[in-house]
Amino acid sequence: MTTSATHPISFVDALKFWAKLGYISFGGPAGQIAIMHRELVDERGWISDARFLHALNYCMVLPGPEAQQLATYLGWIMHGRLGGILAGGLFVLPSLVLLIALSWIYVTWGSQPIVAGIFYGIKPAVTAIVAQAAWRIGGRTLRNRWLVGVAIAAFLAISILQLPFPAIIAAAAIIGVVGGRLNPAAFSLASSQAKSATVLAAQRAVTVTNTLPRPPIINDNSPIPPHLQWHAGRAMGYAVAGLTLWVGAMAFLALIGGGNSTLSQMGWFFTKAALLTFGGAYAVLPYVYQGAVETFQWLTPEQMIDGLALGETTPGPLIMVVAFVGYLGGVAREVVAGSPFLSGTVAALVVTFFTFLPSFVFILVGGPFIESTRGNLRLAAPLSAITAAVVGVIASLAIFFAWHVWWPRATAETIFAGGMDWLAVAMTLAAGIALMRYKLGVISVIALCGAAGAVAALTGIT
Image (cartoon, rainbow, N blue to C red; front, side):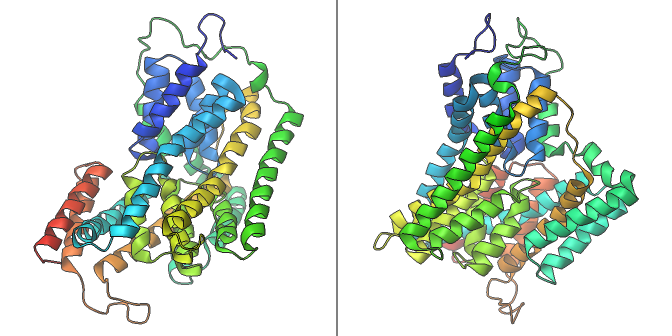
């Protein structure tokens, strides 16, 4: 399939790019989207800027990782179903392989002094990163006192009342529906401005004038090929296929281990996580934390912080931290008897499958409708309220991380036991200043804090 008789896009060339993207997609969603924009719009001229941003607007409205969904969408535009599946899969594969390897190193040698020192150093960095995420998202979302109130209510609900994350999201959606009717301006303000940080970053990356010697291959006026045209029967077919894959996978896990087995629990839990990730990976972290750490106890709070650090320093979507969670949960529950490595690897593959399956279904089912209408997608009032609630939840997560890092010997019964770790406090503040004041990159901050932690361990300071 080609989109233009004059300038066809080679399937092999596209495949090479998607494979390359999986290894260079550092920098979080904003950086990943900027890379795709630079390569596909500015340098290769495969797609026009308007079509690129139109696809991104749709992916932003969906739950799940925007950058991975955008890669799937663009691959689907260029080469149909196979192109979309390969583009989205290759975007995730390198990160999955790398995180499995790093998880194995973590489990095998994590107790070594030098390794423990590195992770001691990166915990304060991760705390600062999560706090920065709450500040950044709040800065673009909490545009009026109504949305600020929703954020505060969500913060209190999860930190004081300890309500489950899905209940908070549902309540925020209801508030958005009611608020959108009573005060439409207040609850539409976030949606009118919320192309999100990822979209704004992509737009800032746009070259003002197109310096390419020829127009984009897929441009604003390109005819819609058959595979991009809306067809209700085909959309239903994709939806049924996705549901069949999900049911088949869950049935297989139940068959080999039982409905209450660790792998079955992971499949169901991460399916729900995939459907609740409005607002990006940081939005779903509290839900993953509640389930993986508190409910199922697949890993400890300290291990969750370490996993987030590994996710920040590897290519691919940040939500790939679920592979680390799965790996440690698989090892802890020994899902493959007698082999910690196979236990972790199988569990990491299971959680990755269930986390990303909905993203592919969303694109293949909804993409043709979006392409055929070419309308401007706007977030509805319920989603504005949900986004505001997410800010409060992320702020709660940042405070919870700070508590574990600053009072490492504290417990739920004695919340300030053992005294404050002043070195961890200083490193957290330094990391926050580096991120927010000097705009240092996340990877650089984690590397510097990890090095400082290693030095502290070697010198006996910690």
